[in-house]
Image 1 (cartoon, rainbow, N blue to C red):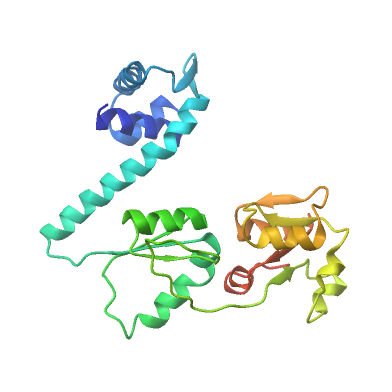
Image 2: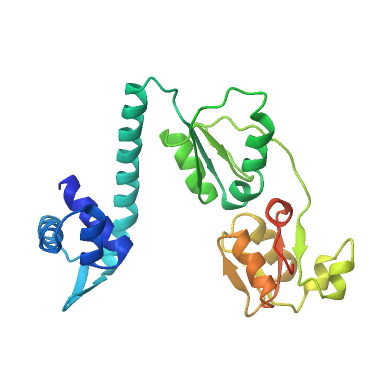
Amino acid sequence: MELRQLEAFAAVMSTGSVTAAGRLLGRSQPAISRLLQELEAEIGYALFARSGPRVTPTEQGFLLYDDVERALSSLRQIRDRAEEIARGQAQPLLLAATSALAAGLVPDALKRIEPHANLAPRIELRSASPERVVHAVLSGAAQLGATSLPLEHRGLTVHWIGQAPCVVALPENEPAARQAVVPVAALAGRRVITMANPYRLRRRLDAALGHAAGAIETNSSVNALAAVRAGLGVSVLEPITAYGAPMAGV
């Protein structure tokens, strides 16, 4: 399995066509097709279904893509770091955070400490699920991670930084939106837009409201706010996104 084959595969997955992948990588279309065929022959299954000039990823292709993209990203980091070392530059600061904290807390925190701290000249901030944030720190892909509790892991040192009550996101024209406090019971019978992860806030909501019919699940607080703005329901969220990345109409 060669690096060129993996790059060709990832490029086709990203651009959606062999021709566009060739333009992206600076190679001809036949060269990209040959690299894909060699990779498929080596691993023993098809990564794309072909219909004339069009290619559609197979289920196996989708399953493999995440791992390939992570591997290529790691190689790009190694290449970038090698160039920084050659130029005598300091090591970059690698951060991982849940999407809510990456959007609503970490940028403001970096801005506040920048005048008082000797931050690295380059900062990489990646958003991921809580489980992926933990994995990034454990594997060394990130030096620091920001996530929500509960979190217990022998390989990590956890620093608690604060807590805040949850908020309910409502369309701004609703009467309840003018109330300082909205009881959870008031949401009974409403379509609730919830986080898909069942082990965090979702568990407590299910205990309080039951498994509401027609609920919408998402893996992003920003998606939940957008769904509320569209009039699809209401959502109970951590306050970081609600106040750190507010959305008009909610």
